[in-house]
Image (cartoon, rainbow, N blue to C red; front, side):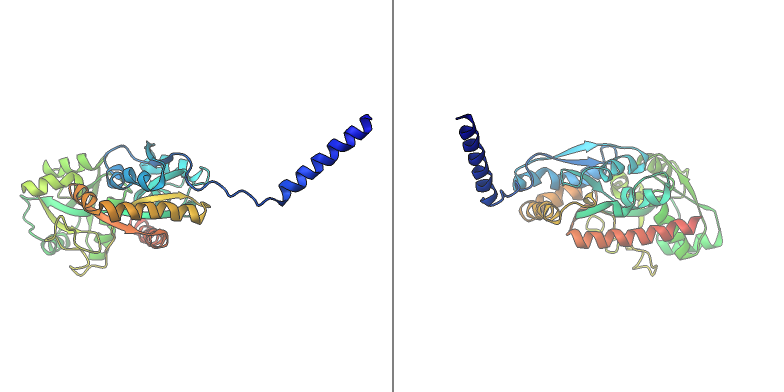
Length: 323
């Protein structure tokens, strides 16, 4: 009797397994099913301000919020390294800029990631970088400054937010292109670099617009040229270096990236959410970025990847120029 019962249960179990095997596989839950972490590899006040107008709205189109997590240090290397080593599932992203993703691994050989450690998702905003002088300086335009530099090699000093940072390197790239000799005075951040210029301790500053914007509008600083490939809406009268005849043009784009290996459907879902945010809230986003001297610049995964590749080539050449 016991043998019959056992046979019955075995047969039933086998039938159940066959039934399960014949059922269609259950589709994976659509992405995302939980909040998404966006690591900002700098202290509050720069990259986060560029990205926040977009990412705060992305949850509306994804059903899950995007939460900022600050991990500053090593010029962006700490936060970017954390994301590079994270699971490639779309739930841990990094706020991307050329400084943290491209320049840091080029300049710091102790960093354990490269630009290839990330899958670009979208560029969201362009933040302008400029060369500015004190309004009391004798140079009214870039031509006069370059002529003075050629006649007085090494006399011009310039401040930046730090040695081997993006503003330092761009200024060095321009100096090589213009065949002039400048002396770099690094500071710990854009604020101190601008303070040094206002105080007359340096001749010029290579800077992001945000820390200099109020002083330019007040007339205490004079913008000379922008590093981007087009003029900025916030300063339409300031020429680009390319307009002035120099082969230097590098828009600074801020965006989001994921660890390499993130599935394309996840990347597309994140980009599409950002695109919908731009379509619905574009005017409000543009107004909030204008306060920082920035503007929206939406690029998809492939376009953004091409931009970062170009940045890698540019700054590789820039580092060679000063070594």
